[in-house]
Amino acid sequence: MKASVVMYRMLLVVLGLQLTTLPALASEGSGERKPFVIRALKTVQQIIDTMAVKGVDTTYIGRPHRPWSVELRTDVNHATLRMEATMELEDVEPVFWEASTHNGYAPSVGAWVGYRGYGIGLSRALKRDGSSFSLGAVGGSFGMNLRIKSYSSYQPTLRVYGHDDEGKYDEKIPWDIDDPINVKSTFIDAYYLFNGHRFSYAAAYDQSLIQRRSAGSLMVGAMYNHSKVTYDSDTNFLLLAMMNDVGKIDFTQFSVGAGYAYNWVPARNWLVNVMLMPMVTLYNRMTVYYYGYDIDGMQGNDDLLDDDVSVYLTSKERTKNQLSWNYDARLCVGYNWERCYMRVYGHYNSFRYKNDAGKGRLTDWTAYAALGFRF
Image (tube, rainbow, N blue to C red; front, side):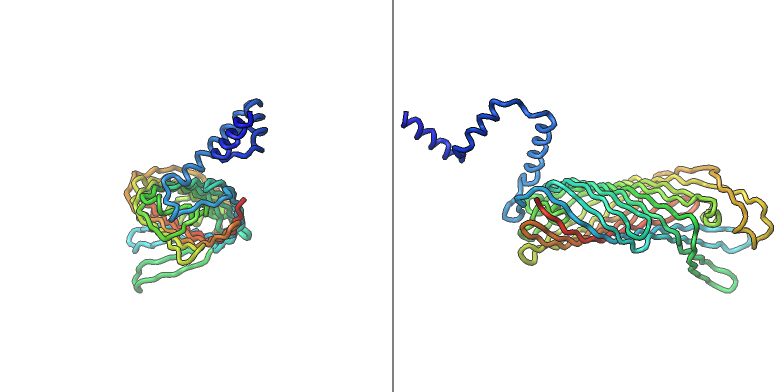
């Protein structure tokens, strides 16, 4: 009997178990099964843990012991929309209009929480109308991100340029409007890394992994963008007139590309990441909304802005698909401690559109600083 007890103890040591675990194991085996939701969450957790380090060279990439992270973020976003139109009259040189609007250098604060690269974030502008929502999933060799951003601008800059009898002219005029130009954009980007066993994208952009040695990787990616620009209020009828009666633009683009990303580790715990990906826009279509306006009681040009103006939708046009190009550029600097980390990040995108009424470009860049805590 004593010999069997000794052999049993030796077996437990070989298996790495302690005698104190016996009651727990016994109770777990004899107790009821855990609810389905708990078991499903445990399964998802195991899959995420496995995918995070599957095929990874641990001399290049490490995994923090604490899987959960919460970040406090403060960021500055600058989104610019440039719309161009041409006015052509009989026997008169064409006049070119360009209306540029932006959200200013709008600071915002927010938070992000995630488990090994899978997380959700929300931020809100401090001084202006605007917000952003993000959702991300990052694995060893792949990643996907969703961002929804919106802002309103009350002061577009009007540029008028062309050629007349006296030569060329080009003027910029700040313009205050009562009802804002509203811009809402949804971005979805996904990528695949060919050197995921030595290069970690997650180490740079959510620090769910740690890059120990410098490495780079070729990558392929895809990007979806859906943006809506609206300025069809009654008080903006002059802006609509200059934009060839266009008061709303709804455009969708899908791009694919290939690029390169590099993680540089200049010293222990430090990381600098640079990524550039040129892209071809395969799907590029837009819906343009045209408006008319009724002006009641107009007594002269001097009273035009004081008259009762009603803006109404007259028609809409869906353009044909047009091939274009784009690119995705990112820069990140980060530092890791045992329980926390910090990161400074920059991201730039540019989207172009064109139809018979005019053309334009939406550019968006974001820079933010994050302080994260692991638990």
